[in-house]
Image 1 (cartoon, one colour):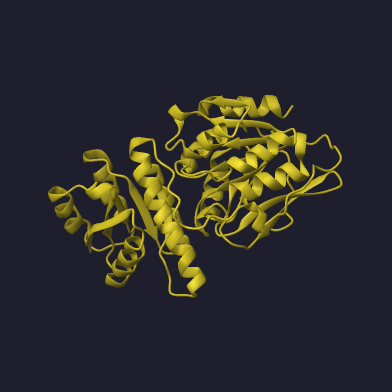
Image 2 (tube, rainbow, N blue to C red):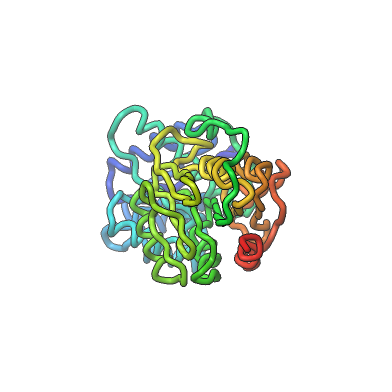
Length: 353
């Protein structure tokens, strides 16, 4: 790295996008754009001269598509890749395929809009690149540059959970590396397992495609959450990208709310917001699981869950792509059990009995 900075190569066929990404990423003092390329052939020449720490890669490009280029990179010279895709349904399917091929993050291309929108995009883009750089070494340092909001901005603290109900609820949070980890976890669960609410850091539209993919693979049903969806046994509700997901309760019925709002712990959806709502409305009937990801989103919320009587589980370092989020929860003494990924499903079933 040049001066300790994360060196990024931007690969996109649009000159406007290349310039926008350059401007956004260069605004972060920890990131240096080492160059840009209009297609994978130009990118390959740049890589042969100088290897970047991270590549941002468009999917649809002339001469060679991004998926083909990604597969060549991963088999010949693995480099952390962040997929930078337009918000389109067909793009979502390709981007999910890219995660299977070894890309570590998906981000939405920044679009012209309000100053607030552009600032959110800047935070998410820079965080994605830092996550990717950390994923290569499977360790990272927590960088604090932008102001970071807490779950207070979405849901105020509560003195405790509501009266008891017998129904169990599982709340899961994941980020970098989480799409493949969640696939492993959910495929291992039986059709009658406790209802689940999940936050995976991912842009809007991509979460719907991700939920559909999991629904086709798993015994349980999986869907992108909508306001007032009931949390049912054998079903997982995934937070829609760019919206916070909250667990709520009416009598014995658990349901979800989907909310706009600011980035919390630099994310929307935020794991902290979901976990706080689980602490409040499910308390000791909840099981919390924090999985692979950079940063500390979910660590404070998991501590609130543990204090409310929930069982809390963290993915272990060896099975994480990035150990940041579980590590931060462990440091806060918020975790009951630290387990390798293949053992988490069994622990959930035991805790939810």
